[in-house]
Image (cartoon, rainbow, N blue to C red; front, side, top):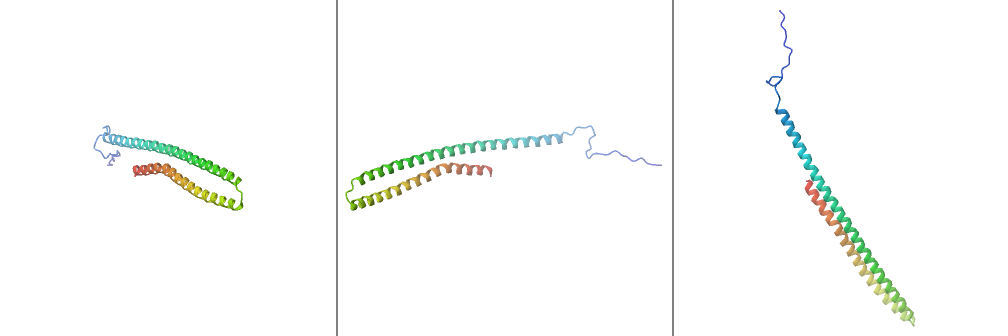
Length: 151
């Protein structure tokens, strides 16, 4: 006699084919919910970081603009003072009566102008450094803070 072979496939579970598989959907749901929560948390962190970066850039830009205005005002102040000194020197030259008096007056003016310009250059350098620090320090601190949060 010929034996008929069983051609039905059996599943690994011992549950009947119609029984619900409740563990797999719950595991999948848990994984999806966890992934969604992580994505939401990451989005919130990125949103906060973007907001902080925007504030830092605005503050840095405002500080740089204010610093540039201060620097330009100082330059104009120095230009006005130097122009006044130049006119005063020209008036004094009109009263010169001898070549030796002219030489003495010119040497004195040159010495005073050299001292004045040296002091003005020091002030402008200090102001430029102050503006640079005031502009970059908040940005540097913000970047360091952001990198610390990212790590």
